[in-house]
Image 1 (cartoon, one colour):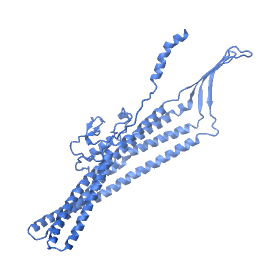
Image 2: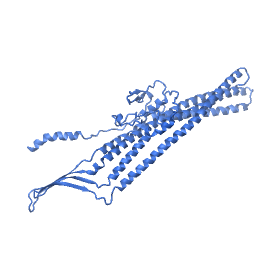
Image 3: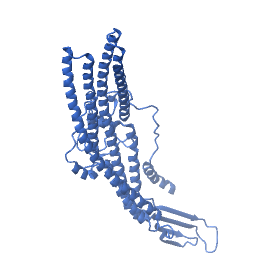
Image 4: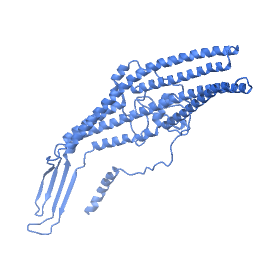
Length: 466
């Protein structure tokens, strides 16, 4: 009768317990690559953030280097795999906030006989680890800062991927210009060599007239082949960042980079408040501080406390508290404290080194930009001057004042000056792009790519440098 009464009440309790348990679901690995063959097949949606609606990057027109950087964040395969770090940090935070379960101990001794014995013996106790309560606040604070540090580090990784994609897109565009000018130069030299060869065959020129042109054509062919191989390698690297097939191609707009900011000193002063890597190191250091406090608290004896109920064989009943604790004779958590202090010192040095490196890089880039601006201006002026001379030479050739070889020399000089200008401009734009990233400007302020394992991640989990 009693068992029947308990069964209806026990069923809901068991159902509630089972409902709170985690369940296993298989997640088989993919059996095929996931590379896209067309840029339109990529994830092109920028998530909504800070009140701004979601946006989709259009690919039916040439893409800017900034758009390509965002596409790399959204689609880079390596970046997607690294987001498991965020789930691990979230799991660690969850573990830190959960107190250990109370321990229940039950004992029963059947009555076999003896003087004064009349009933079986029972023992029941309930105990709780008190040390987990003492260290709770420090443990949770350290785990929370560690989670935020991982989040900031992931945002910095996104910046690095976007930065690499922007520079590669800039280089690919420059490669295209280099190949075009190299093709034009080779075409001029090849036509001139063909004319000289005809004159040589007719006996109007001797064989020595071909030698300089043959060497020039060979040099131009080698330069063109090198430029084509370089472009192929740059395209493959860019496609790898975007998750595209290596042979996929798309249009890149003429690169446009914002001029270097005028308030570099102010941006440097506020760098620790804006750059995700520095923010991540600060949070990591705060986590190490909390871990050190926890380690110091762990010097206290480990204490387990709770009530105990006893009934012996003579039917004597007792109830009272019991405490179990360590005697801190040998182990006073010296190892844990030493490890926590060493970690804190290491993070302190890493943060200082990163801060010094950031300022050094910014100042070095400023100096390089000043030099490259002058070099590019000189190269542009040289192009203008060479083009003017080549135009005059074309008029002189039409009047019969100079021969075709001299005209070709003037024309190839223009092309070589244009190549110099392209190279200087590419270096200048690359340094300006890098300077912006070093100063923490011009890139997304929150995580853009969706988390592959926890798609319900909210903006509350994202670090937003101010």
